[in-house]
Length: 482
Image: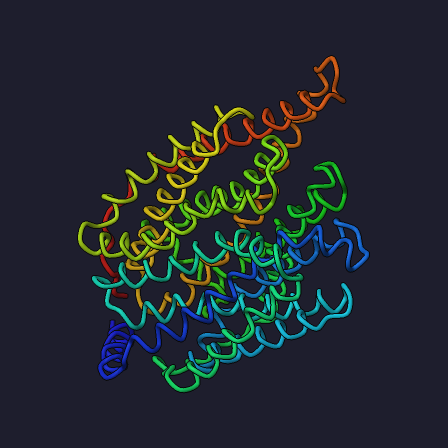
């Protein structure tokens, strides 16, 4: 009991004279632009295929490699934030990210561009755990909702706005400006953080377990790589082989973490029920958000015949509203608790997913705008309130582990969700065309695409029903002291 009381008292003393606003601004600016890069490059792929003279499958490594590095680094972040100060980890992450941005901007070819993207991913992989862990240290449980809602603007708004923003930039400028525009903000974040960012807790320097690091790298890396390669087909050796290796490594990783006194990721956080429910909801939300962001452009451009720019504009209102209401849902969480937001949010999510199973090539653009707005509002009502509630139940010593676990699940669920739902869509297309009397006809191909997307959203509707069930078990968490 004595050992657990001391972190709490130290925390109170640490934040007593700390100005929170400058610290929040430092973290939000850096995190926003690093996370934005996850989706900022997606609209530039056709242009890069021509300019860099490489295939689309090769260019896919700019996204796959990015997700791979982030997924591998986040589990180790629980160790890093205990070995180094908040200031050291954040500045280190932003400097690496900035160097990567410069490398991308001046890259003469694909190889150098890939190196720059991987460096950016290193910065991003370290950023989110630092951001969320700092919130837990800065704010007491009864005020974290509003703070985490502000962070929701970063976590959800940044990747959601990426395709739209890149479409606008690429409409008048070359692809290198995707990096040139980010660069001054990254540099400003470093300078601002150097001046204002304070250390909130001393490093505890736990023992480094190299075997755990290797197992987590192989496990999470294998899963992300395997699912990201599923475009080749699920019966491809590279796909099921890497997924199998990843699952075996993760099983060994879990067994080892439960035996170690100082684990890399303390999975005992799952013994707290609200944290476990949060993890389930987070997986469903990230799979839903990232897969929808991937499926809707196929529908807009393949079935409705819209341009990339127009597709981005359709999703712009929902993306903007998602960012704007995240701080509001955070404050509502502080006042009314999680159930008042999460239960209606999951119901709205299920309704929207059902409507997506009914759309066709004749559905109006306004209908898609309304559906996307409702989808993003529902996600805002669920994501950050659920994460805040789950983390609130953890004792302070679990903060680095809890944030690392949730961020790891976010990345892995997002990558798996995109691969899985696109695979379902593709299978549905093939099945439709197999039964078609004229599979080469444009009309039939359009209907096949719509049919495949319907199949994907039917499964998404099933996940939404599971989310509703989980939501009814959610209750306001009280911080546990161990």
